[in-house]
Length: 236
Image (cartoon, rainbow, N blue to C red; front, top):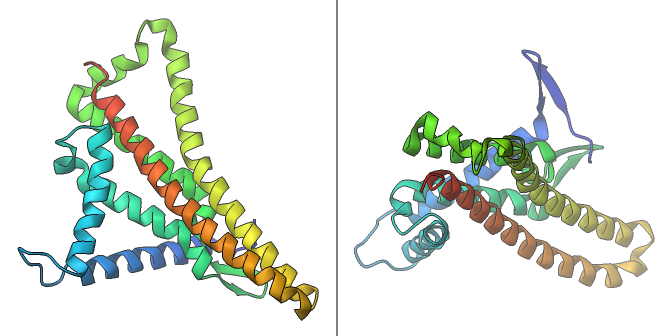
């Protein structure tokens, strides 16, 4: 991992790069939604069309996993989660600020702590949704299905869901940024004669990394909504 600056507060360690990058992602997403949502009309056009398409896209994800009525309750959650992770995945490909050996801006999801935090939030939200619908007894009874002897296996499944959901995103985004950096360093560390060779490789890999970043955001939200669906239908 690239070196970053950290500081201690109340016994906790805070990563400056993750904080700055996370704020940038939030500002970009808020600014984009703010601009697209001005002067809404009954007959949408231009930027309003784009915003409605974005909403329909995430609504389609949760309709296919949770149910046709899901957008009423989970639409905002899916929309925010998908586009925040999408921008977080792509940020480091377009904005990478490094002062000396310290990185200040990169893709937040290229850090395992951030990726696993999103994973924990999604699974916690899924459990909350299950408790809200089924009650504590109905929700936790699901861990004893089909018989109580399956309790350790069901708990292990929750752990593996948590790990795989976050590590999948981290691994892909970190590897993408790492290889992009290696190609860029190759071009300038061995003389200008390598630039014509490395430049097309860098552009091709950047394009592929954008594709991977989009796919990973889609997979993350799809699996998160599947986990929500499982918690809601555990007794049905």
